[in-house]
Length: 466
Image (cartoon, rainbow, N blue to C red; front, side, top):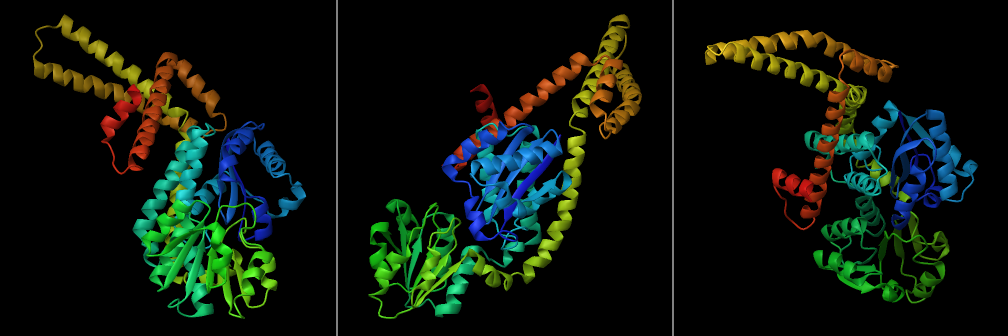
């Protein structure tokens, strides 16, 4: 079993290539199923954002795993491998695990330490889990990555210097148009990125923020939070005639604004400059807009300079978080190594303690005159004998887990101690516990989305019974 991640991101891949290899949310379940059905792929998760496309996979062999992941990408996007191969970065095992922790915690983001990516990683896992393309390895790994990220952000206080791509877009706007006071600003889209953009614009003093979206109700939800207005997309061209700034972040896979649309509005502007920032991938705004007089278009790659100027303090916290990741990778590696040995150790303990209990029952029947104190002493000492007897075998079993022939050696260990039935029961109990925990998480996630949370015991009891 091996873990690989094959991906491309903003650091090495131009936006033109990234947008061609961006997964659409509505087709992601189908993509996961097709990837999972590829030879060598045992588990998989796809993380696709405006800055990265990454395929995480548990594979039976490294070379075949790499081959079939690349084959999947080429087939899914109908793109020759030579077109994206030079940009594709493939990490394996420890490096892949380390990369996931860095991605989830925002250390690999354009804006170091940003938290939006954590939600995207959680959503990627949830989608894969719902489509049954994850298993024991990725359920545990991604859970650890999410838990670590929350803890690291809290302990290092990396978010004390708030920056994000939407923040950088607003800062770039300030550099170009000066203060937002008395400026008319348009926001395209009603997703999380647009909400953050509207928030930064409002706090930056924008006098009038108008949110456009194909679903008017969603635009209205964001606009009302920041004393803005909501309008349908049909009115966008007319609004451009009066606007000073437009920032766009929709989920469209085609241009939302063409050169012809803006040119039409530009005739009414009488030479007034229009500043536009496109922070979507695929891009919302036709690059040809730059050819129009007094129209200044920037895309997500242009934000890098703004982002860099806000990063110095975050880099100090990031260095500490990176050191913390090394410990996390080591802990996960230990967990993987002991994955097969835990049921064996549990079975050995169960069988040994059952023998001790049977022996005590026999002693108490044959020596009925024993006092409670004497029975207690005997139980204590017989358990001590048992624990001392199995201490060395347990240590040896753990050492076997690190061996290349771990599976065969643990099977021999199981047969020597005649633990077949106990191991089977231990594995079944472990599976029941995993299902119980997953049911509890799903139950509470649905409840949290409606504003309340049930106690752990009640939630798991209901989930298991249902």
